[in-house]
Amino acid sequence: MTNRVALVTGGNGGIGTEICRQLAAAGYTVVTTCVDAEKERIVDWQRELEGEGVKVGWVECDVSDFASCAAMAEEVVAEYGPIDVLVNAAGITRDAFVHKMNHENWESVISVNLDSVFNVTRQVIEGMRERGFGRVINISSVNGQSGQFGQTNYSAAKAGMHGFTMAVAKEGARKGITANTISPGYIDTAMTAAIPEEVRESIVAQIPAGRMGRPEEIARVVVFLAADDSGYVNGANIPVNGALYTSF
Ligand code: CAA
View 1 (tube, rainbow, N blue to C red):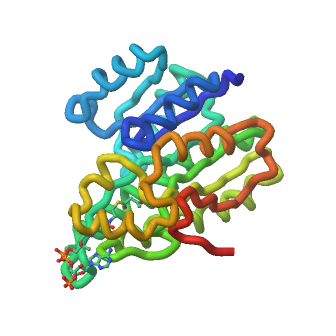
View 2 (tube, rainbow, N blue to C red):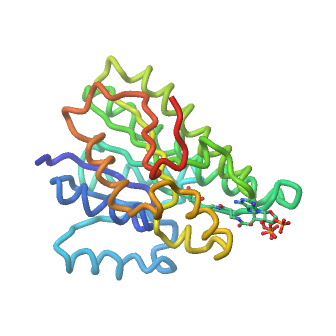
């Protein structure tokens, strides 16, 4: 058990909620970000978790906005203490073939999924260096590794995340900081439920495991990477995809 503080962006999402649950179960003080508390019904979400005995704090923050991230981090540190574990899990899709994609859909996916990783990490990394401990865990995607129809924006952002991870890993290695990427495959969440049914069925048919993944199968890897004694796993990109995409 630990008493470290873990910040999870997009912690109220399909994968994020399970990450919050498992980090809380491992003893972390868990705080999530949400863009619009009222719209996202964050208080109901928090209460539901509380009913299960899981305590999670939240702060409003637009992760695509640097100033908003700075204010959020200040609030988290003041209320909960220094942030030792950062899980960048906030993400959106705006799928369209590249020949049909508009600039807004390109920009929003790049800013929410990729700029956010700098915007939030930048707020916590100096403290991690000073304290000689930190864990940065970036939730990417199999589609950042393999590319996907309709996802030039998402695939580019998710691939970019791992470039960021590798550089942070090198910069932080002597300061007790690790940075790693997790690349989930198709996980049973609202995001994959939004894929047109026929397309989704054809994708699932290609998964050697014969099924979609479950959020808890991602969260357990987060808990592993966050642990104090996982310090030599650094700069890795861990696939959790039911063998949908394999590589050296
Ligand atoms: N594999 C093979 N063929 C595909 C395909 C795929 N994944 N996706 C689309 N196509 C084909 C269609 O079958 C269709 O072929 P025909 O012309 O021969 O009929 C052609 O491409 C055009 O497809 P649509 O009629 O659907 O065209 P559209 O412009 O309306 O939509 C699309 C295209 C946006 C790509 C849509 O098909 C779609 O949303 N696909 C799903 C994309 C996807 O996988 N998103 C993942 C979201 S979940 C996620 O991102 C989480 C994660 O990290 C894994």
